[in-house]
Image (tube, rainbow, N blue to C red; front, side, top):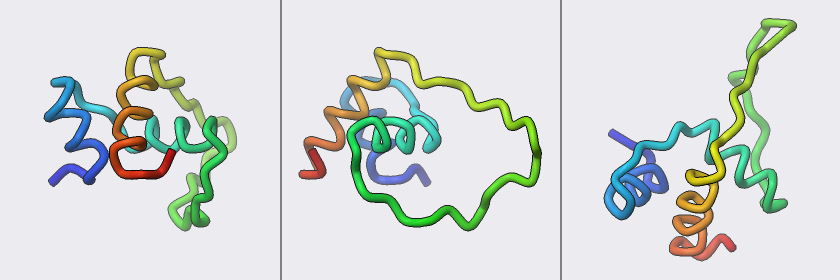
Amino acid sequence: MLPRKSRNVKDKHGVNVHTSYIVQVKRMCGLDMGENYNKSKKENLEVKQCPQEKVEYIKDALEYYGLL
């Protein structure tokens, strides 16, 4: 089952968004987030950047849930 915000983006815009993209957008917006207890142990972790199109979709979902 998709997380609530991912489900909102899928239903409204027809695209899937990874939870790491949601985290990136939350950080860009300066939202409070809890500590991640599933941190990777890799030294050179490659993190893909969220495409601008999906950033707008995620912001729309965050506004829908009253976080922005």
